[in-house]
Length: 193
Image (tube, rainbow, N blue to C red; front, top):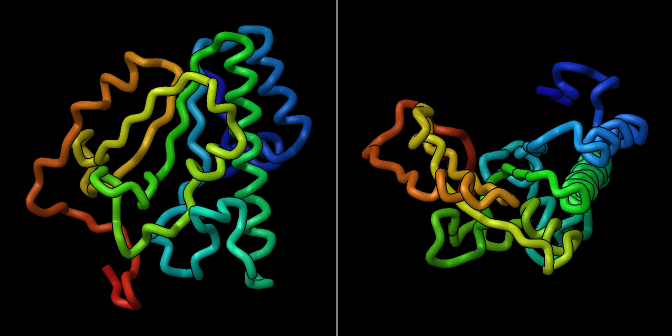
């Protein structure tokens, strides 16, 4: 297992650095890996992040204009990571290597597990990737609650993957809890959740 995580490996594993990205693409291109699991930071797109204004919208998934000055670098880094994810998935597709992307769900699709009317215009990684990845690229999508895997909180999550069987494995996961031991933070209309 090769793991790239800036929080654990610092600059040497920072995927926004060209040489690190090139190393990852090389591993994929040379078929040194069988599966690539991408879990870019969730916080830029999380509705639970109550420490900042809405920075992304459905129509502006690379930064909702006007971007507050103090958030410009943060938004730019999130957009850079979105583009990195798209390039890695493209490399996987070309090398016939399976891939998975994990991030918070879209909130704008009525009738889905992730739908939340108060946040329906909040942009997500999925909105950005829809603009970056070719529609012709086959992908399977599944949204599930983390509590179905034993987490103490619900945390609804979406996976996009080239691996159909993996998506099917997560497809039947549902929340069966009346209450959760932990609650992730956030605000709706100024009220803490």
